[in-house]
Amino acid sequence: GCATLDALRAGVAACTACPLARTRQNTVFADGTGSSGVLFVGEGPGAEEDRAGVPFVGRAGKLLTDIVTKGMGLAREDVAIVNVVKCRPPENRDPTPEEKAACAPWLHRQLELFDPKVIVPLGRHAATTILGVDAPLGRLRARVHDARGRKVVPTYHPAYLLRAPQEKKKTWEDIQLAMREAGISVPGER
Ligand code: URA
Ligand code: SF4
Ligand code: URA
Image (cartoon, rainbow, N blue to C red; front, side, top):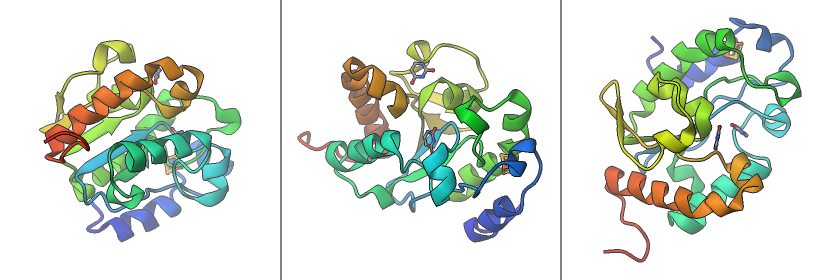
């Protein structure tokens, strides 16, 4: 029940609620103000994020930054960026169901405090965590879901797009949908 994002960040920094606390270098809380009304949710920190304590700063992060700046026409700081788990799973393995459950209260309080107009889960893990359903990303993307009264528009994870660049066009369609839902004008449209 932390009252502010700063208090929540401090709570996460001290968290030892799951085994990932033992192997992390840094907790990775969030980046950006979210002033645009769009909040992206990734899966969990990788090696570079663990070192920096900042989400999406590696190769996938560069692609996400390009989507925000070159695609959406925003500054990176205008969106909020968080992850399902705040500590790096060793060897870049997927977070376990127990780790995700342990970290879920932090995520849900982040959603309350950032209070985004639209949540954009990146990839299957974030999408199924936010929506509480298990389905392939291809079945979840391209539409607006409701999760606890919030609009959710899932799309592909940028790490997946690095391996499957042919899906970038569909990702851009999802991002445009999210922008319209957030009331942000899409560059080149009126
Ligand atoms: N992938 C994620 O899901 N999150 C990050 O912060 C970086 C890469
Ligand atoms: Fe706590 Fe989440 Fe880190 Fe686990 S991953 S120690 S629950 S902050
Ligand atoms: N499957 C996933 O799990 N994530 C993606 O981003 C795309 C396909």
